[in-house]
Length: 207
Image (tube, rainbow, N blue to C red; front, side, top):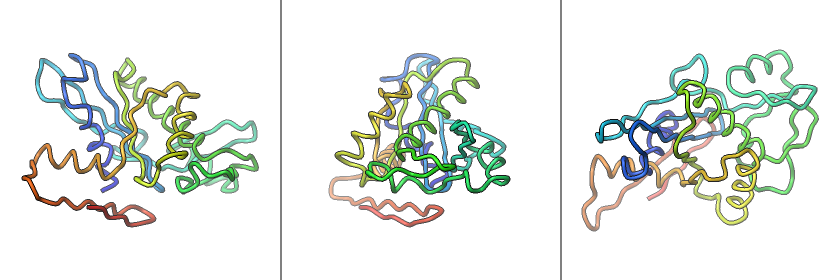
């Protein structure tokens, strides 16, 4: 599920209604263990082509761990894993559950709000994809756990604004998955759709 979540999230843009000719939209899904992103590009008025982004040596996903060096610089993905193997005390993982919490996350001896780590990772993905594509995305969608409501979303949006992507669309993970499914398999009135997420550290189900 987590491998394709970024691909599913990008469907919320509704194709050419929101993305102009040859522009592309970017979707980001950050899990407790892995992060996935995908782009949807509309060309010649056809249906959007959806492609997973390469964020490192893997063609499908990369680590969602974060490494902080002695100068408080943050590293993500393969770089974080490489540096963390040498200095594991400067590596932090599974910080998503702390997003919106009052207590900060300790990274390499420094206190950082979890939503700040999340936003900085999103910004790193946007920068990486922009460099690969030669232009920034026309729109950005970010999936999140359905429990992130109220103050959690507010704090996350504030953090995203600080890194320059405050205009991103936030979408709950099961809603992104359900919309992706409905595009290929339209539901009839009265039908029920169940969604489950078998991640690296937890299992969730919704209907």
